[in-house]
Length: 418
Image (cartoon, rainbow, N blue to C red; front, top):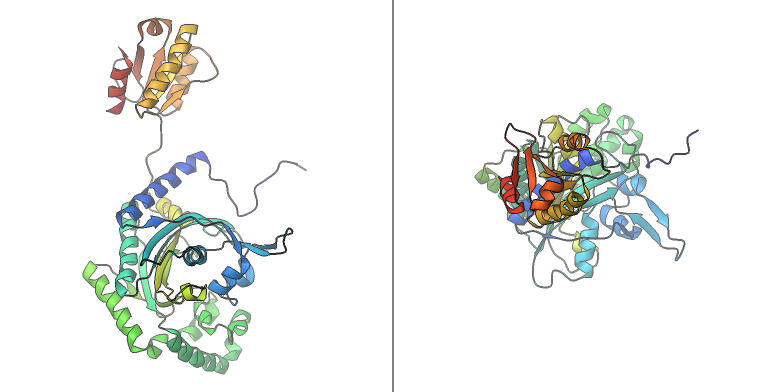
């Protein structure tokens, strides 16, 4: 039996060849968020368990089955690795009184944790980008979030499909809840174990069942749209008008409810059929009651999150491959004077914002040139004692047919920038 330590199942290393794609995605996301005026917020990955129970809901899969929760032996507190980012973001906004001077547009990026059965697109440590706008009540921010995500898909070169619904306000959901309970009680023999457990605690979540045997029953269930109040309908119509004006296509999915209890009014998902069962790559909506629920003054809020692993899988499925990150030049050298001069050359080129890999481990010029070619660099900078004596370097193209040239550091920098 091997005693080599392994990573935890469902918590994966991001290796250098994959990290380049992650960096491409992260850089694209940061530029995209800056273009919409959103500011970054960073919160701890560990929070009091009560935060997630209060925000997400006690009768949800996340809280009931999936959270990494433990008792801190030092003080007896129950702590949880964050399973999602909205609760932590709202907690920070309330704790630090960030809404004192008006609404805030915020974003975050980082790891989340859920104890699930690992499979492609669903991991125990996964990564999300979250976008939240707090203090804005109108349908314009709902539409802004959908427009933002549509804009990101264009930047990334992918094309998921938008599904849209509204959950109304608390009173509408109360009426709908009563009708759902009566309907499902009348069809109790057709309910699976999970639906029976949720029948009197969270019947709305039955509509989101993944059990194919219950799809016909769910499809015939009372629709929340029939119980909506005028204000919720007007808000939803306002969102749809803005999307129409923006030319954003969508389809209404009346069974879209989301898995977190804090949502109200607008909810949406971006889905794809290219990732199998894990087809939702981005989702969000309104959570107008959550700020007050977590101890703040009442404030409307809206947001969405996307799974980075799933979006990277979609990039791969769509054949989107970022340019590899390679150095501008690989520096080879031999000789005492050459070694000293090589260090100076590498430093000078880096000060000119060029990427330089300096050969390590010695060896002949021939063996070093093999390393240079394998590095992916466009050029090799060759330094021997003669170049060192003249304060020069020989620049040899590695990816095109061109002559090797002896140049100064400034001349080399000009060539490398082209």
